[in-house]
Image 1 (cartoon, helix red, strand yellow):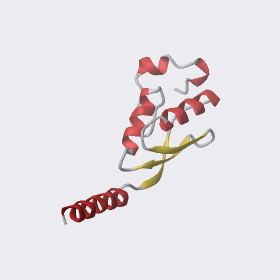
Image 2 (image 1 turned 180 degrees about the horizontal axis):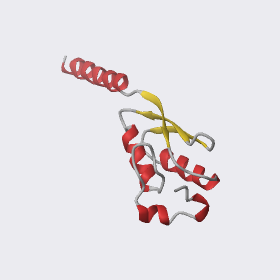
Image 3 (image 1 turned 30 degrees about the horizontal axis):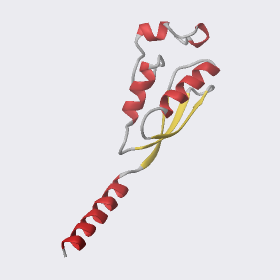
Length: 108
């Protein structure tokens, strides 16, 4: 009987975890100018635990990200992009990090 209760509890917990984990798609503005920026922006986003897809568009400076909302947030993604030197519509990159970018990437 204890084994049945334990198995039922485990199955129930697994179901709750599965239901609460949701893949969402969001957009944000991320400043950049060139192919190196595109690579850096997408790579930075994809290296965040929970991000499944990242695509940055030159013409609109829009980053579209798909991520598991149980593992990360749009705010966290924005903070990481700023740490990599790219201003977002939420966070500004530190001047020292921005100034260390290659000259072709300086968008300010």
